Image (tube, rainbow, N blue to C red; front, side):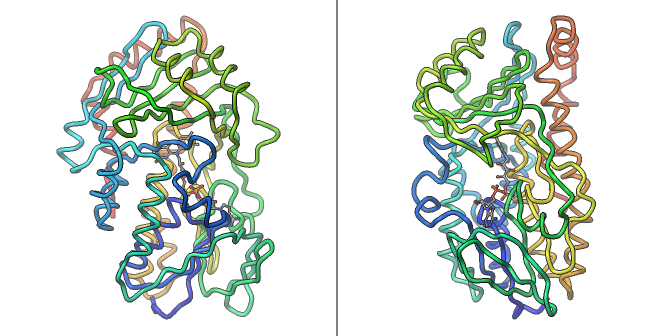
Length: 401
Ligand SMILES: Cc1cc2nc3c(=O)[nH]c(=O)nc-3n(C[C@H](O)[C@H](O)[C@H](O)COP(=O)(O)OP(=O)(O)OC[C@H]3O[C@@H](n4cnc5c(N)ncnc54)[C@H](O)[C@@H]3O)c2cc1C
């Protein structure tokens, strides 16, 4: 592609920042427009209240390695060596030792505060000594995109319009870019909502390096350390979507008390984490399984905007990272952006869609109700050979570009 073209990225989340970094590495300049103000983006907490964690799996770490950032993420995060799944009453169902994954891909799973990950990506964009620039604009909430005279006009709330040759829509689940080009396509609520927090805590020695998830009836609870002193936890439950919530909302004591009741029959570690919690972030879990096309004309979508997934495989952010990198590579390799967009969707679509489907299914399995159904499920999980589980993880963690 002609590097003189004017490329705009809408959304400076995980996907948008990865795309900007990769484009910069390929010598292509961008302007990034983010709805949040600079203060909330640059301060220690990019999320509300106590913040949240994220598990960065091996596929995302391999992309970060290509961007020269993997060691920084590793140093700021906390390396996990095992995954354990439990039933809230009958105990351990499955343990996956991640040493084989690490051997094969060089990285396994790194747990990190989300704010730290954003900070690393943001700082890398500022620091890069490349001939290409990435200009970040904060407080730019995109309203719509229209195509006029071979260019895209982006309109923002309370800001001047911006004209670009091509636009990357990285503005998340409720993407304004997707609504502009595919207005009929809407995310589907999964029937499950989630709460998240990071608290000062120590997990028992046997779980110090483990990503733990405990399945209950109509609910589940997961956690891991994100650094030596802090634990990130999340909980999910079958529940109608919150009528007040546009995206994520931060809630305090009444909600935490309700969670203590909901998880009263779970193991002691869950009670201890909830007892240390002062604020939680609530997010309804939705996905977007089958967007037939991820681009139209001069606009292309990536990450949650194109294929949002429920978080049950811990892959939504990783998929946005894969997208951001590959899109930049295709824009660099192909003569025409239209070709790049087509190739990008062709290479990424199958994996991203498979993850959305499997994650939705896993969410339902984890919340199964009734003794008989749970016993059947538990037996199926327990007796699945370790080699079969490892093969599934290897599929998730392999890059096909
Ligand atoms: C409970 C939970 C746990 C999760 N755990 C994991 C995990 O462990 N591992 C993992 O890989 N993934 C996880 N995910 C998924 C992950 O958070 C998302 O898939 C990922 O953040 C998507 O990245 P993105 O860049 O596409 O979108 P986002 O991260 O949503 O970023 C979009 C950006 O665009 C901005 N924006 C939005 N609208 C506009 C607009 N109109 N104009 C301009 N800017 C706009 C937003 O402020 C934001 O900065 C989890 C999700 C949830 C809900």
